[in-house]
Length: 282
Image (tube, rainbow, N blue to C red):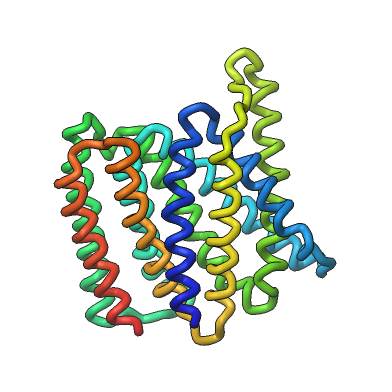
């Protein structure tokens, strides 16, 4: 059952990424994230219940990681074609798996090692194809923003495995969304105070409401999947990153992005690496 929950989460994440890219045509990343998370908090408000201070401190740590990952990801998405940004983001499960070895003492078998190496080769292929669009991986700001987003996202995934051992999924999701909303509001306030003239006012876009619906559903399915005692974090991470298939199609159809053949090859290699890791894990 937890595998199908993870698959549903992946589908929702893919549509969520496409809606995010669309909303950034008219709004700042901070504004989109703030409103979408505020709506998500409203949806989850019935599950805001009391809990020990220690649990809330843990959730606040997660909120900081998620906020950093989202803000950095939005900044990267604004600077990069969605096909490149989503493929960089798809590398996250590889690092989740590798860090699980160091932190939780998990051991990789031959299939998992092969998959990790294949996935890293795919990222190198993507860096080569991206140069045709004037994007240099070592110096491009958008790439560095996406790298920061991936790093924070990996830390958040590892933290999820730790805290869900003693907390209920909807308790975690509802309070995290509330804390993230507050953090984003403070970020926007600081940005406005620093430079009021350049501060971009928010324009209402119905995509923002869609973003809230998709991310709320995706996260709920993810938390319930991870809560299962038989669930494997590395496998769930791999399945969720298959959302890149949805974003890739969206980038090709909706945003008319170019150089798709080379990117598709890199994406295919990356998915092959993920498949090897999943095969070696289950």
